[in-house]
Length: 294
Image 1 (cartoon, rainbow, N blue to C red):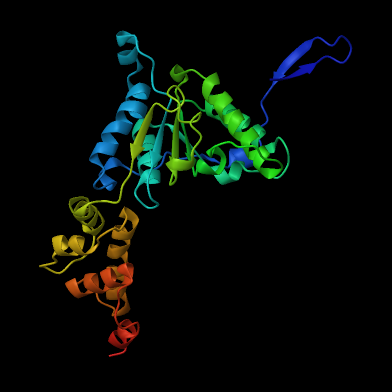
Image 2 (image 1 turned 30 degrees about the horizontal axis):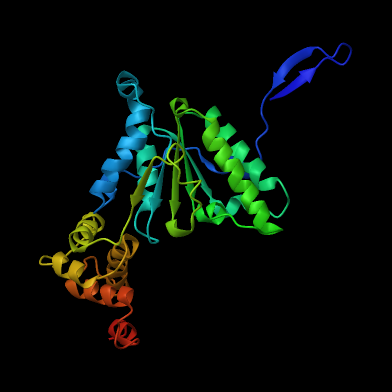
């Protein structure tokens, strides 16, 4: 807390507004994210879980009070890149009408001693001032990896993580601040960070199965001008071991193939070529160019 004192008597004059680092101020999104659950395909179980630990406590805290149980503080989303972790975090912020504060773990890694921990403190101060709020910490493994004996830059990263642990312990779950962390490497995270009471739920985001890939294709192709007879189940079956972002990219690439030929509709052939491009299995790299120049 910053205060102003009278110069003659040193009596308290007034409380000054808190000063937040400009880097921290840029982390808050002024508008509520426009992502919704309807935009997410193949993650029904993950949506159900995040509703329980994030949305329900914010919208209906009385339910937890009546049961006499503590509200969850935070959740960890883990899985390969492009599987929908960030999209789901934005969607829950949309449905709860919360301020969405997004920070990458790498942004908290500073070269000067004490800077990273200061940013963490100011991040939570800002979250309290804008409550109800959701702090989304992406790439948490940048600062939350297992601690070891080290010096220099690594020790500064560890100080930053210790401050994060301190902040997680220092706020009550009833303050309408929820923490969503995301990582691609849960295996390297410090057990202290994963302790219950800091992170109350761990939700896995695997590569989508065929039924989930089909659902994603339907979501991202529903506004496309498709010719009749597009076989989306066949397309989904070809996208083995792809992530949700790559499945979405197939729809975009199919539209781009149609655009290159100045057509207003997308064909099955466009999708087949898009699948080949995304899967990196195009037999002839000059096929697309020759097709356009016909």
